Image 1: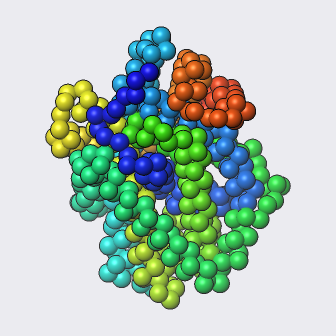
Image 2: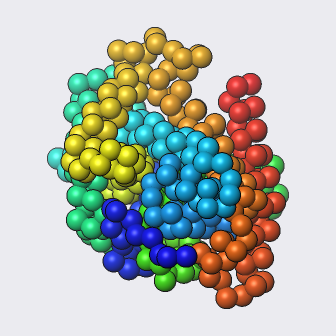
Amino acid sequence: MQEKKSIHGAWASRWIFILAATGSAVGLGNIWKFPYITGENGGGAFVLVYLFCILLVGVPIMMAEVLIGRRARQSPINAMKEVAIEANHSGNWSLVGWMGVLAGFMIFSFYSVVAGWVLYYIAGMGVGDFASIDGDAAGAKFNSLLADPQTLVIWHTVFVAMVMLVIAGGVKKGLENAVKFLMPALFVLLLVMLGYSMQTEGFSAGWNFLFHFDPSELSWDAVLVALGHAFFTLSLGMGAIMAYGSYMPKKSSIGGSVVTIALMDTLVALIAGLVIFPIVFANGMDPGAGPGLMFVTLPVAFGQMPGGQIFGFVFFLLVGIAAWTSAISLIEPAAAWLVEKFGWHRVPACIALGLLVWSLGIAALGSFNFMSDFTIFGFNTFDFLDFMTANVMLPLGGLFIAIFAGWFITRKMAEDELAISSPLLFNAWYIALRFVSPVAVAIIFILNLVEKLS
């Protein structure tokens, strides 16, 4: 088969793809969610189960997404259709691409609201607003932010503009230049923060909490949390990795690249834990404090520590960069489709998408103030967008991609695209994708729905 080329361009190298996909995977979930769910579920035993789930669920589906994207060299909507037709199946598989693109769009609308909180905290740390702050004052400050729609709109708008400026530049001038700068900056800031946390009195306690293995602390619920996070942390089911895969050089190893991305994503999450837990323990705080850990607990800790203002600023800057690189991948599939479908230039496509997602974001941030009484099936707008994407659209997207790549794409097509030299390794991926991954994602889908709706 003659090699196809993407009209959007291609990554300069395999490592640029790895950086971009790692940037997509590394987001608020790594630096905010992973530490607190580890704290809630017993530490090291949870980490081990999580890594096992990454290997059995995350890696096979991610390889499938990249395979489909690179095979078609188009946005997820068109890629699913073209690969299905090539395999002599219905082009209606494009509906899976549609669901992924829509999910990414919806996630971006409320993700940008949370990223706006991060930008607010970057600015606040920079001017010393959190110096010597106590728990009550930190909680009141965060609550007053949520109750202030004007401030939320400003930071939400800034973040949407930051993302759209990158996407408007296209693959080479926008996405590639951004990840070449932002991802090394993220790693450097993470190591700076790790060095800082190593100097705290709580580092050994944080290390033991994160890596001490105690199977007795591991519950079935903790296993399900690990399984769910292993799926969500790699940005699966929303078309982002498929879109990035369509820009991947032909001779690059998909399997090796995906394993590297999964390892880097996990490494960032673990280092983030080593950054956060020692600071929490050094200040006698609760490591399982939930979402408030980042916006209430940590500002108090930084406010009480020597050099805390500087390192608090560095920490929130790190979180902001992670949010930025993730958000870029959320909206890129929609931008790519508009360019393919209507022949638009990137700039008008990004303006149109930016206005739409900004408007939906206004409704999401209104959930905390002027639209707090508005509900959809009992959810406010923010929670409804979160529920629909995390509990319905992404698991279904991942499930259908696993089924499509495992049962509808021909084995020959998969072998040609993956080019895995070892038959044993290929068969391991193929079996995991066909049997293990779909069952695991179906479990995530069903149990999440039962939990949320009960």
